Length: 153
Image 1 (cartoon, rainbow, N blue to C red):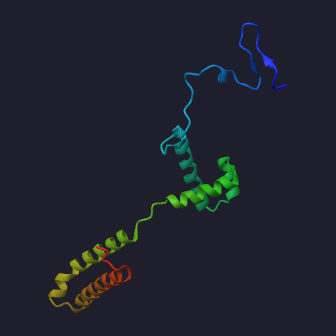
Image 2 (image 1 turned 120 degrees about the vertical axis):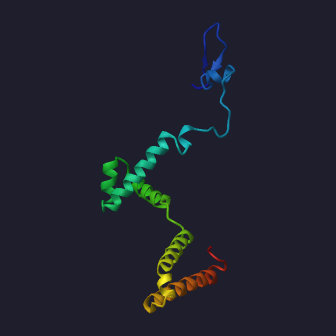
């Protein structure tokens, strides 16, 4: 049946298994290979919608909703919600430890600077406090160098 001839008297004969495009040349023939698609972009409407869904799913999960309840609310499958929450957790921006360490050391320096004048004037309690801060800071720097093999500053 697929080898039946199709066509009229004035038309070129072709088998029904052949498509009309394969007989005639198509000037707009698509190139093979990877074609950029609009939904592959991080800023495409599809990607933005998925990011918003992941954010909402994570917010609902934080509020102790079950995966099934979140899936019903967002009208997607249970498995998609599990993936969305997993991806949302991976996308969270967490401050790196080195930045946190620098911030903490700056706070300690500021605290020591505010009490340093009284310690120099002979206030024993303030002097002891400043000594403790400076010792802690020196120990923190030494321990960070020992564990990583390099200074964090």
